[in-house]
Amino acid sequence: DAFRNPKLAAALYASQGEEAPVLEVGSPMAIGDYPGGQVGRVYVFTNAQEVALYKNGEYTTTIRPRGWKALPHGPIPAEDYESNWGGSATQWRFEARSGGKTVASLTRGPSTKLHLEVRVSHRALTEGEVYDMAAVRVRLVDEYGGLAPYAQLPVTFSLTGAAALATPDTAVLEGGSCGAYVRTVGRGGEAALTVSAPQTEPVTVTFTVEET
Figure 1 (cartoon, rainbow, N blue to C red):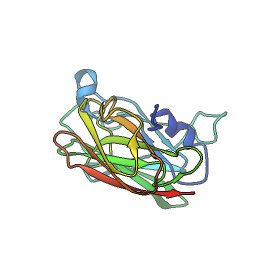
Figure 2 (figure 1 turned 135 degrees about the vertical axis):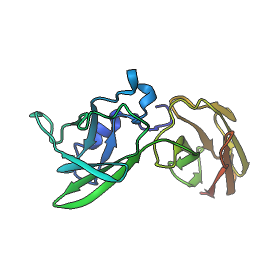
Figure 3 (figure 1 turned 30 degrees about the vertical axis):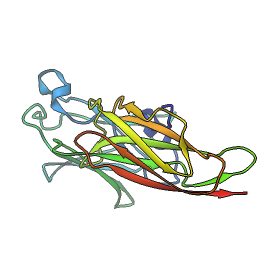
């Protein structure tokens, strides 16, 4: 998006590389998103050789890429193997494996608590002939690290010190994400940005501004 929060398509592109393990599921696995609570087929994006599925801690099956000729690592379909995905809300764990070893894992399940995830493009800013700027990327995620796409909460940015906001001090989460930009103001020093939203703990990140 405009703040470089990755969309789901980013996982498909990333999974074609070999630099680092990639694992993403193309669904939050929330039964309320599907007719009759039947999740049906979802796709797993990974550059691993296979993915093992665990339902409520119990091993279910192992899925592997198939049917893709133009992609090094095509999306892997995960089917309704046990014909009961439409029952009560379930916790699923996905384990990506290569060479017999688990290289990445993620969990999807009913959420009980949300928190802010704040990442910045860089914390060391330089004030020179022109101002420097950093992107602040904000996501609202559950205890498993899954995005909360329906939580359209207001997010407030409060900045103190040797920097200023280059964007409004309030934004609304869209699809679970939003962001801001921080810029230098002509002097060196330290700056602190606090990001807050209702029903979550605030997060503070710091910046160092160096004059050249």
